[in-house]
Length: 220
Image 1: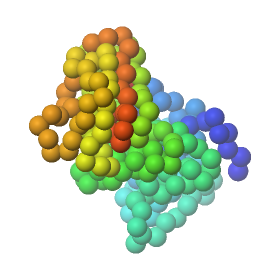
Image 2: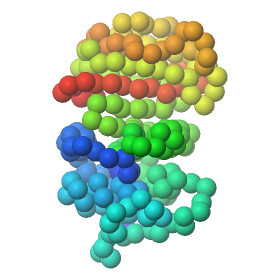
Image 3: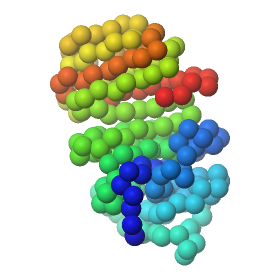
């Protein structure tokens, strides 16, 4: 099976979506689509044909037909279905990932697990974003993220995979310059606001969890 490495990999999880808004921003036709278990039900709901379905099928309502490539996983395993999908994506040559249907739902622990999938991607030099209709989550180990045309959007930043990280950011209501954020400290990077046409968050040292909230019709 040939893979176009310039393509991004889209992983669709089992967390419910109320609309197809996120698929209008991230077109499945521009991605290699992997459904993780119950994510196949979401694909069927919105008329998306996946390239691969992977999982133990403990949460899927429908089983994919034989015409869709399927990788059956054991129920008892160390990795979640979403993590397994990311691992397969890397094996296929992808380094850029969009995770949809992987945040929210009844199981808060699953959302935490999927944030750790972002860390797995970042630790291997890849880039990933976890998306809902109005929220995007990034894990950044060093480097920077630039946000354009998002005035009024809310950004929160937390140290991740360590007790602290050193940050510089501009274009936000509360800028920082080479400042440490430490887990459990009173200086918290919660609910900052983008006030310029271009905002930048740079992780100088360590690893950061970045949450972008864009209400209304704003896009990242």
